[in-house]
Amino acid sequence: MTQFIDLRDVAYGVTLDMQHEILARRVEARRRGDDTGDDYLITVTHRPVYTMGRHADPANVLHREWLQSRGADVVSADRGGDVTFHGPGQIVVYPVIDLLPRGLGVKEYVRLLEEAVIRTLAEYGVESGRVEGATGVWLGCGTVSERKICAIGLRCSRYITMHGLALNVNTDLSWFSAINPCGFTDKGVTSLSRELGGDDACPSLEQVADALRRHLSDLLGL
Image 1 (tube, rainbow, N blue to C red):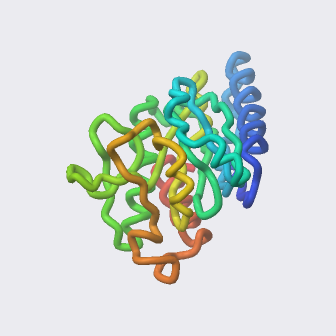
Image 2: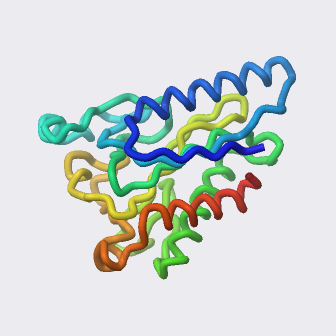
Image 3: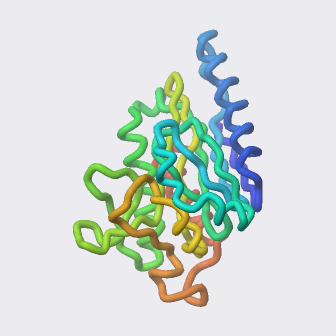
């Protein structure tokens, strides 16, 4: 069974603690041979925050004083990947699910997360795809104007996942100017709003969140 949790304007630490609690419970149950626990799909918007993955380079935070003056903290995250931003106008999804009964490894799981985002964007006429050697979902793939619209960073313990994806819907992209997003210095960042020509042409956060949940549910069997 899957529990769906939907939260708005939440501090990053709240959902991080929530994921850790669920993960610890599921991992301990697995050690006892009990694989009957619920999966969770947590959909959230965060207050402004920059998160640093396990192997993030501190040099990729370019303007720490500037971002802190805007009320954003820099926090460590026990996920893969480098530094990224979470904040208003961005849908973040944390699937805390068991990959084992789905027959999935981490690479296949990442592909399914990417595919859910690709299908969601296609509903709004935006063509997206993957870039070799880089996780996430991109526009302008294979061109000089490659730009990232969705970041992915994960942790997996005994086949139970946490962390997930962040999709820019109508995010203020100036937040990304304080960092090298995901460690890249040669690629841009975009949002659904920018690609559609502005907020007036952009679907609401709730519409996009609903579409994304639907595609994730279909692809992951939630």
